[in-house]
Length: 104
Image 1 (cartoon, helix red, strand yellow):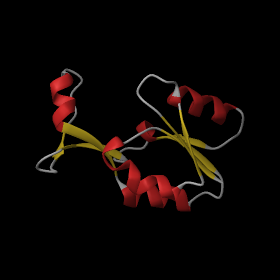
Image 2 (cartoon, helix red, strand yellow; image 1 turned 90 degrees about the vertical axis):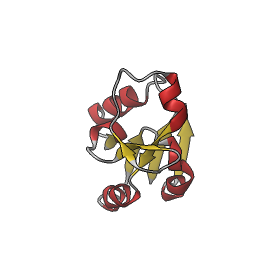
Image 3 (cartoon, rainbow, N blue to C red; image 1 turned 45 degrees about the vertical axis):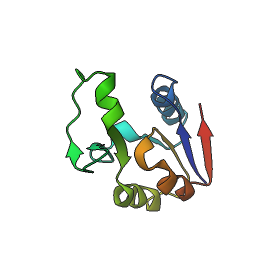
């Protein structure tokens, strides 16, 4: 079974992933996979480098995107997997790749 645990920043998704791995349950956090998630300009759709000094106006004009090809490659490697994280710009495109989606 493939499960996605998602939710807004700070809800504990990464912590859950680490704890599941300690218990022998394979869990991967979006943030731990280079290139799985990236930022793009909402209007031009061009990739943008994220900088932690950005303010809330920056988030209004940019979105976090999941690389669907890379996600499918990961999912194809496992029979059972828990993934944690979010890329809100295209979440409707990848939610269907999971058997269950849990929102924190």
